[in-house]
Amino acid sequence: MIQRKQTGEDNNSDDGHYYISISDLMTSLLFIFILILSYVMLSFVKKEDLLTNKIKQIEQNIEYRGELLQSLQIELLDKNISIEIDEENGNMRLKSDLLFKSGSAAISEEGKRQISEIAKIFMVKMIEPKYKLAIDTIFIEGHTDSIPIRISKNSRLQWTNKELSSQRAINTYSEMQIATNYEINNLRNKKDKYLLSYSGYASNRQLCNEKAKVKASKEDRKLCRSKNRRIEFYFTVNTPDIKNLKEKIVELKDTFIYKIKYRNYKK
Image (cartoon, rainbow, N blue to C red; front, side):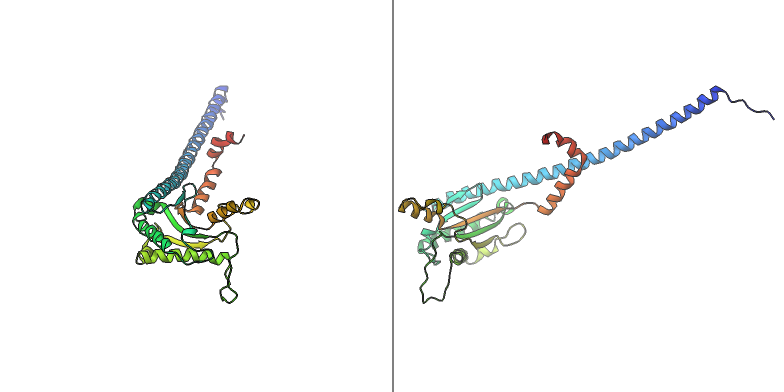
């Protein structure tokens, strides 16, 4: 039998095939890695764009709210109604001194006029598309000072300032209904839910800290308490689904692209 002698040349040939196979394998792995990296990067960009758009939407709604408050202030001033606005927090304030007698939830004639005008302007403003999309709820909030209300011993009502502030808010809303022939009930937000609501906070949310005025003059203390006796309209803005937004943020932070991109900010 003739045996073929294996030469060094044959060995080199086999080694060449071996190295070619390794090279093909590494090329394939690199290609797969590039595909995975591209997918992750695209996914990251989409999630980042989504979050950016949501933030821009919130900022736009806050801007529209400020624009709405300024517009309301100007139009009400034309009706001889002076209000205070807080654009940052979204509040519009009416002094309770002009609406209610001390310790009472009954609305004065001047108060009825003011509330009527506010309701009519709401009916026009809150159907404008940009405001309807921007505003989620308008809370009518009743507030009192810290002085306990006095009730006759013969009265069956055992009110505290909590009940008083709540009833003032309710009566304000009821007067707005009467002024618009109850059409204000038709105002809805973009989720088709009632736009207006009401609540009472007693003296829990003071504009002026009454405790800090204990040693002040009688006039200063009186002025401080008058600032706290008020009706506020609090405008909340529409926001994205918070649960969904949190999930997107968690997903975004879990990507290694995020960690690479923002790792230097934590140093």
